[in-house]
Image (cartoon, rainbow, N blue to C red; front, side, top):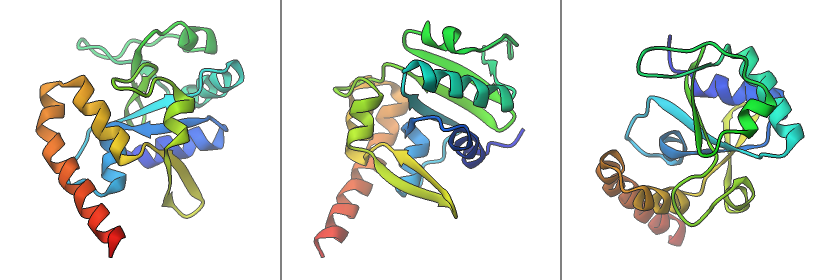
Amino acid sequence: MKFDPVSICRILNEHGVKFVVLGGFAAVIHGSPVPTEDIDVIPSRDRENLERLAKALSQMNAAIRTSDGPIQTRINAAFIANMPNMLNLVTDFGDLDLVFNPAGQLSDYDEWNQSADRAQLEPGLVVAVAALDDIIASKHAANRLKDQRVLPYLESLRDELHRQSDE
């Protein structure tokens, strides 16, 4: 299966799902040279949005991702609502992580969406993308080895983008 985060975003948009792209793919959208193998999104947890999200996940043939391989189960709004922190999924378009409690000061969809940028991934496909400063802050807070490795690239990218905007 080929990783296709744009198709994941397209399907989420087609179903009217409210979400913000976080993590590595958000950094790539901002211009990061560091590749990623999954897409992280924080969805709104309101009931109607979770219903739309469940339908989108069904269309993508989402299954729970485990180290032993995918586990097929019915992923409905109630199931998603009961996830406290994260739900790791595999889809027809690659790995998708639903993040409900990201590391850092911003806690929920509304807070991440408030400072998010809007990015056009292809004609007619605009998504909310976490602000680069918020991505950096979250990676500092998570303090995982993989985050520590990517932080110098993200901070350099942020500094370059600030320089460009000042010119």
